Length: 426
Image (tube, rainbow, N blue to C red; front, side, top):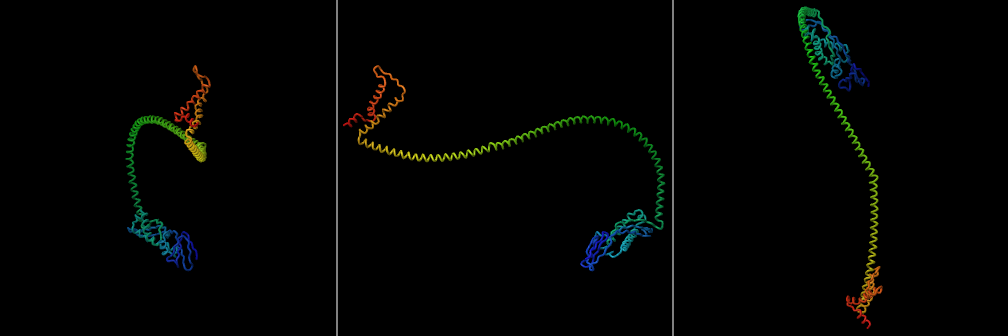
């Protein structure tokens, strides 16, 4: 496999095996299989052609010679046009390519000359150049060639038509010049008179304008004075208003500053409150909560202790109650038995038993009677003319009360102690 490359001013054309149509590479590189593929080059250089058409009859039958300059090149940006160029010019030299293009351009140039007059070609060269460019481009595109530019360089003839055309034009120009000079002199005189008239009119108008200007100046001056004074007054008012606004703005800023300071104070106070709350939380609330928990724990323990003690006391009281109940029951039983025996004794012994009971009760009665006297610190006794005085009087009173006991017992129980005593002696 062989490697080929080309510059930007030429194109490579590869044909042969494995290619259904030739491969076109403008300004590039390609690999080619030797002996089975063929590579050729076609130039893309710009070609400058001088297109001459001698003694061509124009539309009016005047023979002239025309020389044009054309810039052409093979188009490589469109593959279809490059393919047409390869079909037409591949294998030919650059001179042969120029010859083919030259003949095409020269033919179209002659054809356009035959449709125009000498005056049209001479006076409107751009029209002629455009016509040749457009007509020739249509045929050259089919050959893959693009006309870059076309310019009509020169026009000449051998019969002196262009010279005569120039002389007539020159005579006409000279005539027009002489007429122009006469008209110019006439116009100059008229213009001079008109100028003088215009000058005087301008002078009067100028003077009038000066007077009007002075008047307008004075009026404008007065208006300007009014405006100046108005502006000054407005400026003074605006100055006072601006000063008031500035003062008000300053007051607003001062109030804003005070508000900001107050807000900062409030924020500091809030922060201080938060700090004190945290300090209170740390120093008082949490210790209080801890103390409360401790007290509650101690109270719970105390309650449990008291409950246990109460249960123990209740158990002791219950045991003591049971013991007391048993003791009371035993005592009651003993007393019942004693009373039963006493009742049996009363039933058996009758009055003697009752007398024994009364006699046993007597000392207790005497003790109760004498009890008030035992608690008396001082006794003052007043005796009659015949009465006793002293401790014997008190003893006598006690014995007197004791003597009255049998009557009292008899009245209360119906027992006569004397009868009972007599029966017991028998």
